[in-house]
Amino acid sequence: MRNLGKMYFLAFIALFALVIFGQMFMVNNTSTIVVTTVTDKERVTYQSGETIESKYLIFTEAETFECTDQFVVGKFNSSDVYGSIKEGQKYKFTVYGVRVPFMSMYRNIVNVEPVK
Image (cartoon, rainbow, N blue to C red; front, side, top):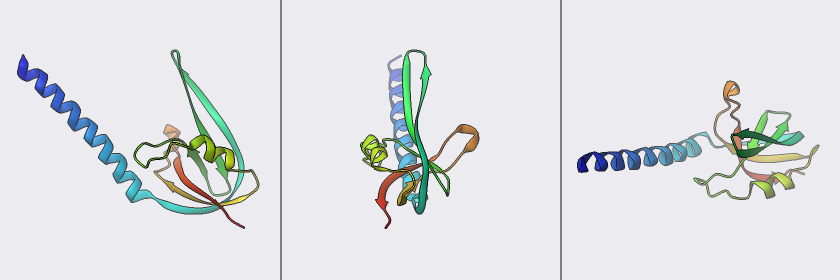
């Protein structure tokens, strides 16, 4: 019974490491820069039981992006980033991830710079 507990612990550690390294791989291998004009933005909420979660969506001429906090890249200011983005203005976005439409997954904005 003692060995079974160790196995579960090691399996948990391995799964945790896989998730962290998978995120790091995703960030390092899908990061790109997109220059585009913002057409709209909105905060989307969804509820599961008593838990309510939300994410920010940024609609542009190029595609739709999300703006969410990401531990792996040290981004914890998504509300501030979202608030700084204005409709009708052109921006240089640093984004990462992949767009998976049937899962409502969007590339995530990591950095924003206004373009003059």
